[in-house]
Every structure is written in structure tokens, then in C-alpha cells.
Image 1 (tube, one colour):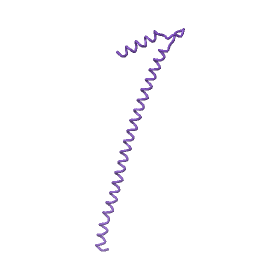
Image 2 (tube, helix red, strand yellow; image 1 turned 180 degrees about the vertical axis):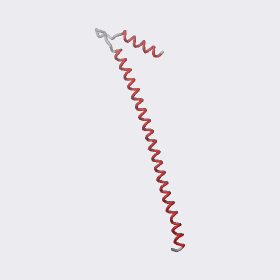
Image 3 (cartoon, rainbow, N blue to C red; image 1 turned 60 degrees about the vertical axis):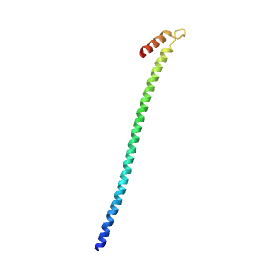
Image 4 (cartoon, rainbow, N blue to C red; image 1 turned 45 degrees about the vertical axis):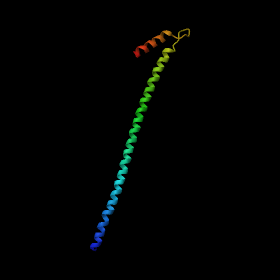
Amino acid sequence: MTPFCQKKNLIKRPVTTERKFKKKMSNQKTKEEYEKIKAERARKKEEAEKRKQQREEAQRLYKQKKLEAYKILSKKTKKGQPNLNLQMEFLLQKIQKNT
């Protein structure tokens, strides 16, 4: 081999190495961006699930409270009249909770 060929080979190698290195960096950069986006999506999904559970718990408590109030207010006497004594007690409890 002549020294000229050796120089030519040496010159070509770094160029291809740099090109491969750049591709690898680009691939790494894309991978990192993908992982970042994936983590962000997972975080948002987790937050949404947490909000959903809180909302369901609040609705469950609200329905339970309404059902208890309905049971008290819908009671009737033997003759079918509304039981005003229970209604007054319910209103009194409601006022005491607010104050």
C-alpha cells in the first residue's frame, strides 16, 4: 500500500464514524423524547385516575347522605300522613350542623 492510500483510508474512517455517531445521537435523542412523552402521559393518566376516584367517592357519599335524608323525610304515620316530628328533628340537626 502506498502512503497515499493509507491517508485516504484514515480520512474516510472518521467521517463514517462521525456519521454513525450522529445517527446514534439522533436515535438517542428521539428515544429520550419518547421516554419523556411516555412518562408525561403516564403521569397525566395517573392524575386523571386519582381525580376519577375522588369524584366517585364524593358521589357515593352524596348519594348515601341523600338516601338517609329521604328515609327520614319519607316516613309516614299509621294513617299515611307524613311524620312531622321526624321532619322537624331532621331540620334541627341540619341547622345545628351549619352553625
